[in-house]
Figure: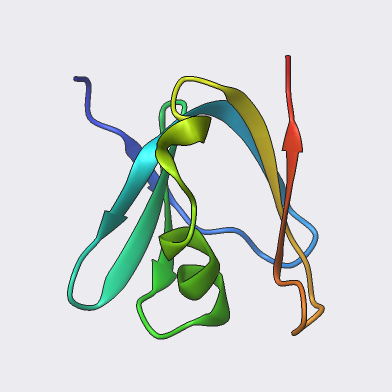
Length: 80
């Protein structure tokens, strides 16, 4: 697997790509999306959401939008 580019999303930024999974480490949780590793602090609300994603999304095209809403910090959509 090629090295993934490590990025973070600011509020109202979106990333789109093929969902490859979620990696949990001691201090961060990463969303593997296309050629990117989107990193969030392990104790963040975003990380909590990522930990609940199932394997049903693997190999699917998705978009993830980071918001400034504490109730819904991440929004997901299907992407063709």
